[in-house]
Image (tube, rainbow, N blue to C red; front, side):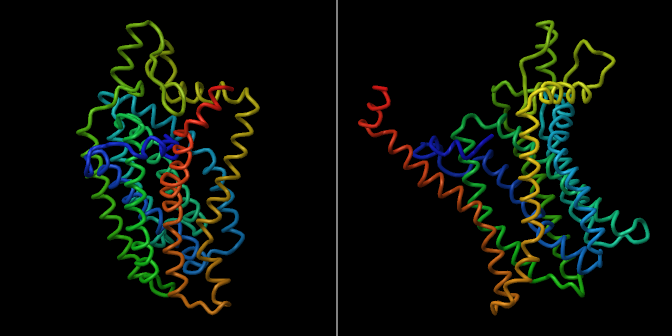
Length: 360
């Protein structure tokens, strides 16, 4: 769901006052998952390179392996999410958010902050830490996006969720980042590990509460339901149901009794796509965008520590700058919705512009 494109509808919309159950649920999920993502993306490079002493060759090799997984796991997570949702009672994705979110903020997030030298070599732990964290991240993000389309009644409600998510993130994320920098010490990780445990526990509570709120919301009649309703429609019509997810036709029980739902989902998603050149080009473009995003998220602290001290910046000013910069994506979204979309909406209301388009 593109919340950016909902900005025009959101402006001047007369939604109910206050924060409802829908908005509160997604705010809790956003803050819970965003806090752990913030700490991991900011400090994992310093952890493995400076604290654990991972050499440059193994670090680069690990990132190359992770880059292949990072490009493919979005599609894989979407197919798996649809396959698992089809087996839930009523087709609800809420249990998936609850279980995968809890695994992410506990196992996926806490795994790298302790050295598992007796169980695995350092390069293996590095690759596993990146792959576990990003795998859970992709899965939860995909399920959250599908849930928003199911439980939000219209685009105005979804835009309202996006606005409240942005406002809450602008307040909480810089605070979490500041606490992270204040507790980070490459020579002694005790304070930072305590912070990581606290953030993990609070994130787990937020996910449980958010999932509980979503569980009480009725699914919107938007054609995205899966599971029992989809199966009944399939049996009634004698063919495939009409439900579809953002990753293609939902894999449910079909006439292919000998083929698993996961294999059917992969076939339905990858089969038509690989035959089109645009799909291959999109995959290449997505890989480049992922690489740019991962590069910035992984090395912003490294670049700041290498460049800014030469300009007379101390560590406190650097941490303040990085903490404040985290609000930029949310500032941008709010400014676009309020000013850019507002200007477009205003131009659309001008009679002479509308009459000009009508005459053409």
